[in-house]
Image (cartoon, rainbow, N blue to C red; front, side, top):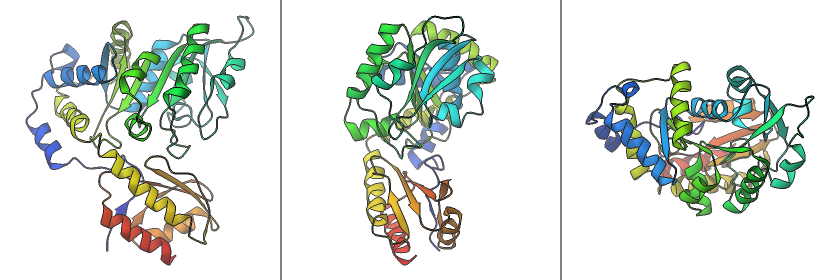
Length: 337
């Protein structure tokens, strides 16, 4: 039986070319700054976004949490959408690691605007936490892969500058957003104080994310990474996969988007589906008449792995290990349910 894993783009396996790059990597002790491949990855990622420096970490959760720690002080407050990964899926790390509170807003599919943010910036008053940071997510996971464009981001960046706030981007799927919008990575670097770039989702690396910022922030970030247990040694074997992904897997993200659109279009024709969130990138969210868990059992019986995000909502995520023939197979199964 064919198996198609649509649970997440984190399930990808290294390609043969990526494995070869990993095998031949030059390595050293990264905590001493001596791993050539880690250094090369950090320099490459920073240059792609026009930012001064970068730090390689085991996960996007770590890069996000380090950024929040760098950009806030205890008793501060950050602003984010209520669906934000930093709030929902990072184990309460905002409070635990940084001692700050979170002001949650309700954006459309997770997309915030400057007009939404401005009234939520606290006045200087001892009764209120000090607003110091805005966190955006691109693409928005809970928004079904919805994208910020630079036209969305610029007014928010201007607002943050006006009020002296830092602006961080959880760019777990930032290259999916860039593939969809056609925006420039370098322009992103001009608007954000910090950018987290995940290498282990659509880009297909097995491990790792990179935090981009200015040199002073990254210097402090290295101290925070060490405290969080993220100081790695011969990490170049993993960093080599990240370099390979940036060199070879960015353009092909459009294939994943095309596959997601095919699935989304088919789902709109299924009588057992009540609605489909518009597909922009590689995430497909859809609602079902039956409970999602019951539908997942039927899909699993046909070799299709997926996940639920609510009692009647299912998520498909396409990636480099989902090929055209597998998409055709999924379409046939959807028609048969």
